[in-house]
Length: 219
Figure 1 (spheres, helix red, strand yellow):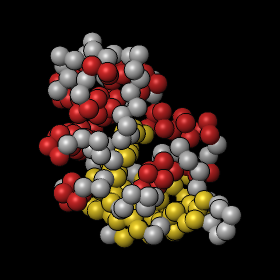
Figure 2 (figure 1 turned 120 degrees about the vertical axis):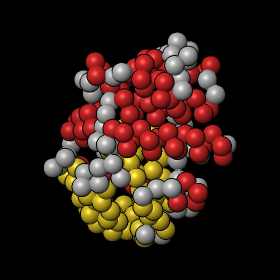
Figure 3 (figure 1 turned 60 degrees about the horizontal axis):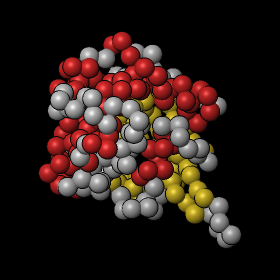
C-alpha cells in the first residue's frame, strides 16, 4: 500500500450551516493499481484529489503516504513531497506556455532532482510526441497538450499519480487514447494511479472503481 486515506472530512463555511464536501472518506491505493473515482460535477472529486496532493487543507482525517501524514505537515513539507513523489495531471493541462514541449516534459523531473534520469527520447516516443519536442503548447492540439501534461507528471517517476478529469476536454476517441496512455505509463513506472473521471466506460477499465456522492465514498 502506498496511500492510505482515513476518515477525511472537508466542509466549506456559509452564512448558515457549513456545506459538507467530504464526509468520513477513506480509501487505500497500492503500487501499480488504478482506481477510478466517479461522481457528479461538484461531488468533491477534485477537492479529494487536491487534498491528497497537498494542494488544499482538510478539516480532519489522515493521509498516510511514505510514512508521513500529509495533513499534519506544513506547506513546505507538503510541497517537497509533491515535488518529489506525486505527479498531478490537471484537466486544463496547466502547461507552461513559454516552454517548449521538451522543456515542459522535463520540468517536473528537474524540480524533483531526477532530471538526468529522464529518457526523453523514450518518453516522447511513448507519448507520440517525438516530432513535436521543439513546439510550444499553443501549437498543439488538445489531445497532444494532455499527452504533454501526462508525460510531465510521469517523467519524475512518482510513486503516486493523481489525475483530475484528464479527458474532460477531449472527444471520446482522443480521451480513450489519453486514458490508456496514462494507465500504461503509470503501470510501467509502478505508480499508483487515482483518476477522477465522469466517463463510465473509462471507469470500467480501472482495477477498482469508487463513487463519491453527498460526501460519501462507495464502491
